[in-house]
Length: 253
Length: 215
Image 1 (tube, rainbow over the protein chains, first blue to last red):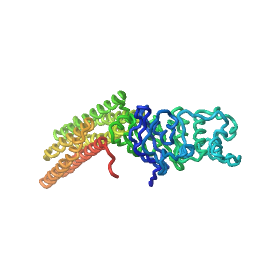
Image 2 (cartoon, rainbow over the protein chains, first blue to last red; image 1 turned 135 degrees about the vertical axis):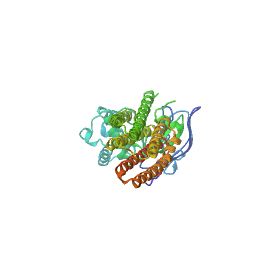
Image 3 (cartoon, chains in turn orange, green; image 1 turned 90 degrees about the vertical axis):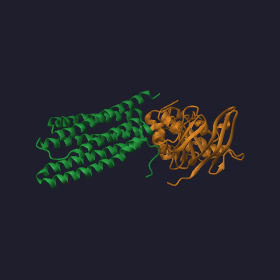
Image 4 (cartoon, helix red, strand yellow; image 1 turned 60 degrees about the vertical axis):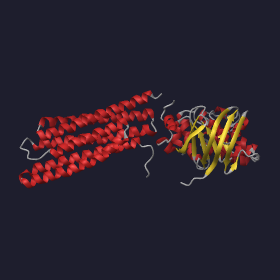
């Protein structure tokens, strides 16, 4: 399989004040693949995820050095337009967070922000995005109803559709199924498999079986350090670092 | 953490060791029954085979439970997969001990002209291989597993020697031809037991290796 690097991280360090939260992380993230970040709480995996579309800019007292290149361009470059960056690198969170508005307006929100006004164009984007998130058939007759009336699993797919609506290149998912039941989880996992054909998907998960099931690559983090990164198949059959082996086999210090 | 998992793995080791002892015992009895023309003992071995089959099913069931309950990965997964494969070879060794005993009964208690020394030696060497291979699994001892594989050459050489003895027996007295061909089959069973012990040792190596074999 030919692989292309979508995001290249070089010597990334992140500090929350005095706290050195990410230590010299280096990683090449493959395009059109699913990369999973695993590790115990507080290991830095979510922090690292957020550095990939500069969500950490919004946190006080954060200092970052190193480079994160998206298609070769450093996203921390002073010339980088963060609104455009976050359009290219979308995000889905742990708790489904649809806006308190109709399903249609949730999906159309991003495209409208980016200047699309044509009703016909917006209709098209909404349908395409909902189909892309495998939820169109479930909501097509209630597009004008509030998104908050949907089930958790449906809300999460609405959030994925909302992310797709601005035609991103990369989708970051921070524990996207931890608040969902197994059926909704399985729908999201199937959806991820579909999404990777078109997008680069990066997912933080506490569910190791999920990492094994869905991801092509896995990175294991521990106290701010990226301990091991490789093909998921290799990480879960022949981990090379004892700390990885201990974690995935449930030997927690 | 994972204390139940570790307990279950310890129980797996325990049952593997038990099954190993049953089979070693079976082989030793089979060869004694043959050389001493002890039909009762031979029957005892044949009847004991169902206990070995039962031990195999018990181990398989422990492995299934471990897979379902613990969803093991990495070394844990290889340890359990290896056990599931090993018990198949162990069960076949048990079958061969029963086969040898069947031959003993078939040969009856007439005069035996044959020299049993090489076959006896094959029995003791294969018991040793089996014993080491299961020890290697339980003790996670790569070197011991490799020693088992190397040891198979000794059994193969003994098979050649036993074959020569059998040919000599036929040449000396063609009337002993039937006993001779029966003995050849017995020798072949022991040679196969050596191969199964080698397979077991190969699974031990698989369970212990730290990187994938190049495909």
